[in-house]
Image 1: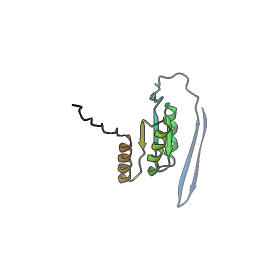
Image 2: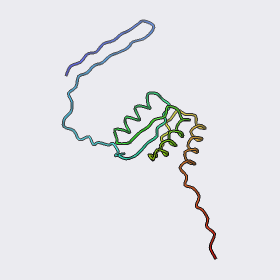
Image 3: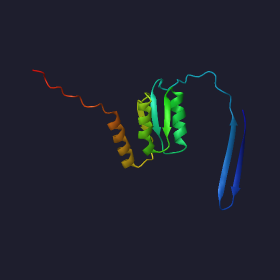
Image 4: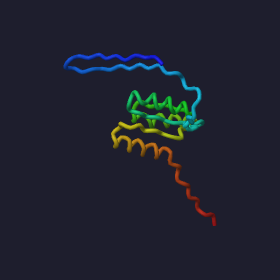
Length: 127
């Protein structure tokens, strides 16, 4: 094993410690692959955090999902409408954390209305 330990310190400001360790790659382990198989699942993702959005997208893609992202919550319904008109609707919409609750509720209700089946037509009985 190799590595290094270092510290940078400034009086009155504090210290930063650095640790670097070189470890071998494990080849024999009992770690199960806990990823879910999301092959064929289309996901619309709106995450407010610019760091989390690509991380979530990559993770879901690695699990086999087809992911499209929206940079802001208000553009998610349009993304979903376009997907429906292209014949490739989303099966799941993910509203990441950090959005104001009232905006999340409004978008969720709009998406629910978009996906609600049309009411059945009543037929008059023929006498």
